[in-house]
Amino acid sequence: MINVDSGDPKGGIHMNKEIKSDTWIWVVIQDPGANEQFLGQLDEDKDEAFIPAFYQKEDAQQCLIQLKTEKGKKYEVQAICFDELAKDAAKNNFMIFMLAGDGEILKKIAP
Image (cartoon, rainbow, N blue to C red; front, side, top):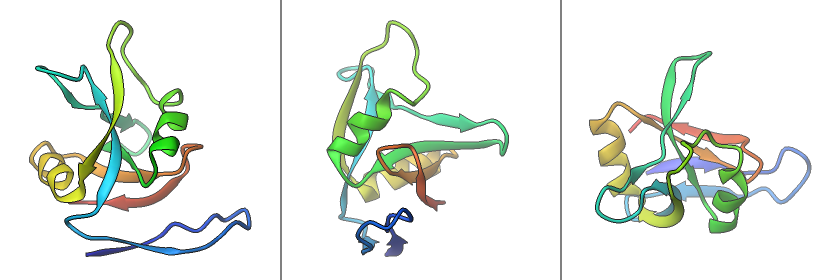
């Protein structure tokens, strides 16, 4: 279980979100279907590979245009159980970054 402060530093509502293994979150899937995979990102300045994840579907859809994508690939926002994402991220040496719709990093999680 991970405690996440997802408060809006710009003065919005502050709430403490708790991520448990069975918490549902939203991610971007590249090539949904037979060859699907999580859309990963690389922070080149910090050399951190991560999977962007979101508390709300709308945030994921809003942020998708800011993420690096490949031309010609299809992308879809899907819900996933945190535990499933964490296992895949750990297996592939990715961190999980919980993001706001504007791309602000709310929490970095090393699975």
